[in-house]
Image (cartoon, rainbow, N blue to C red; front, side, top):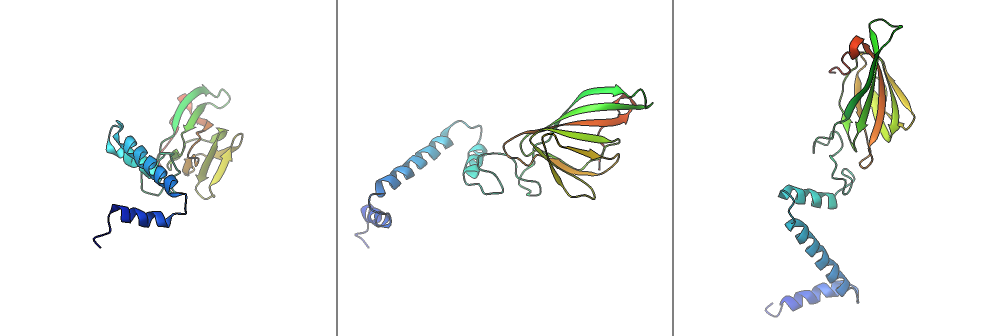
Length: 189
């Protein structure tokens, strides 16, 4: 027992590796250790960033490697990004008194999620980029890609809309038939 020193331990470790690979393995281990220590010492704002980086490095299928994106819905790990909406036009419908047509541009960052909601009027969505997964109550979820459309009847429960891609953004344009003066576009579920 007393003759087991650091060289004895390294002999045991070296005996586990194929001949000629010990220097490579030692070099890789040293490089990884130096890289990890250097990363941890960089000014990151707080230790949580380093922890997140290591979590990305050791991620699984439920969190795509190096995406640093929130986890999928229902995982309880973190909140997902929200969609970003911008009204690009609102015009009265001269042939339908009391109604207007509103056009809305909706950006979905990677893994963005829009929870359950309703719309007071009819909505037609046209996918401009990426993939949008959407579900209306009573029907199965569907994946919609560039150039495809989906329709939401007035008052229907829109269960969710999301961008399932952890890397690429998605975008759609929604055309609403609403009350005069653009009216409310989104109602609670």
